Length: 113
Image 1 (cartoon, rainbow, N blue to C red):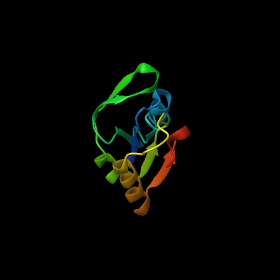
Image 2: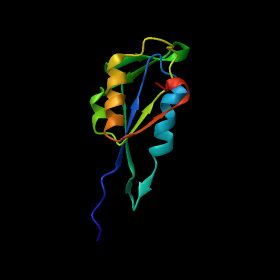
Image 3: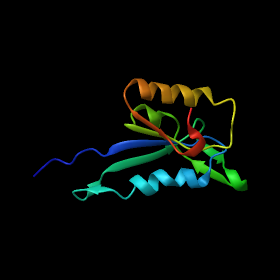
């Protein structure tokens, strides 16, 4: 019997004001994947300051995890945002560190840095 592999870790960075559609896509894509009956991916949504995060359309979302989730993620997905200037330096630093250590970096819509 083969030992169970650890799921591929995906960190989804919610950048306010976050688009709720963009925020949901990574879990829809990765969340249901199984390999030999076990989860293929572990998806963690995070943000610079955990708690209530402003979303578009007059909504708020609760994000429970901080940027520590990016530190050991193998894939980092940055969500789209309504912000066009002054990216949070903590988010930039976390994504840059992840890229330097070889994590895959992706964005959804306007979340590219």
